[in-house]
Length: 206
Image (cartoon, rainbow, N blue to C red; front, side, top):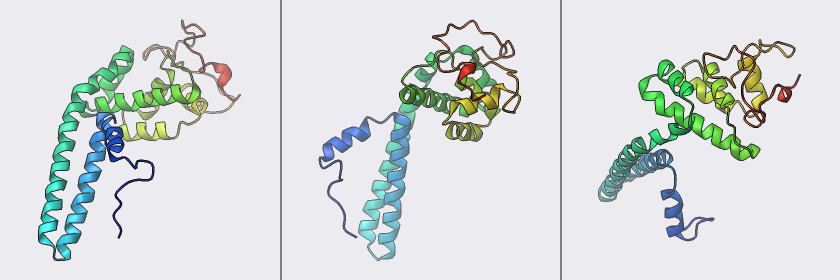
């Protein structure tokens, strides 16, 4: 195996370090854990080849990487609460009531990332958080199902159809998640057209 001294898109290792260092802390923590695991496997492989000194050095490096991951994880716990600042109170309350306490900020992060990606992909920002409520309703307090719903919601119309309509293409609207949780059965909404842009009934394929 030939070990590289540079990467195709990062011939300057300083630039690579900056790019990695600029990752959001939860992503940086995950990267460091992957690195720790890779170094551990390398250590174990060298130990089997009869290279105890090299194996020891690599295992130390793995342990230090894992320690770095733990510290970055602690930094993320300090920063994560700020993600919830832009979310409506009804969404935060729904998550508190329906998800385990240790999953609260994970759910917040998943929704934040989804809303951010949606803004990037469709070139406008949602103000109603309709899609976030649809995702939470469909996931029913299951963090793994929330991940799956996000993964499978490339077409937001399918997401709205599943959460707000009675299950068939010619069905009736029975919920409107432009409204807060607890008021979703009020099919009218006080939002302006601008607030609910991209999420009107006209967007649905029927």
